[in-house]
Amino acid sequence: MKTIDKLRQKHWVTISVIYLRYLIGGAFVFSSIVKIQGHRFTTDDATNAPIDSPWHLFETLYQSGLYWEFLGWSQLIAGLLLMTQRYATLGAVVFFPIILNIFVITISYYFAGTPIITGLLLLANIFLLLWDYRRLAPLVKLDQNDIVCNSNDNIANNVLWTYLGILLFFTTVVYIIIYDRNPILWFLICVSLGLSGLIIYNVRQRQINRIK
Image 1 (cartoon, rainbow, N blue to C red):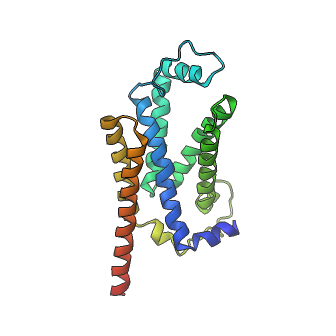
Image 2: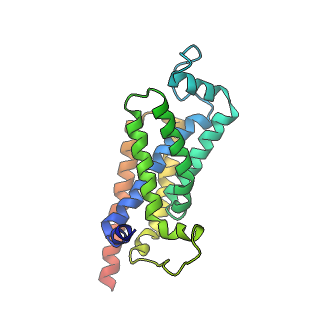
Image 3: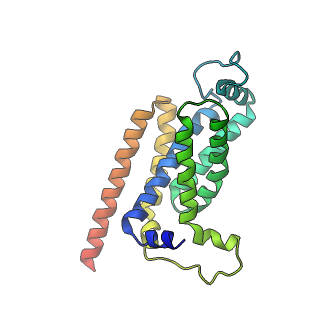
């Protein structure tokens, strides 16, 4: 945990964590909309697929109806909480059982290279939980004397990140509704918004530093 505390003192690591939340939160929101709309995750009807295939599993989940939409809403809420930054700790907690379940599914069936992606998402989630371990510590220990703030909390708590996260969230939702599932264009739009937010943050910080 001392390593985490040292990392939290670094400006660039704090910014990286903010954008990591945008990345994995946005990925969850992107994949959630199709479920909420009641559409298949894959474009083909997999009713006649082998019972031990991942496509048959997806078809079974899709045919469940309510449960399929529940999965979508769960992903949407977890992604939104992460992207707001303000509620990112709660988002990381909600995100963990969902991504753990997805990871176990991808290693239980043949998904080619998909377990690598889900494994990285799981590791990223674990890192976010460790990053906020001081906020989570009161849940598991009675002694709170070592629960302290760090110098970069002001960076992470800047309201700009909340506004940017909400903008990315609604951009993803509207994009899916209008353009369906074209991840490349969506990713490029989100990267452009993310870079714009980072530029605005740096410009504002320079202005504040000049005033001081």
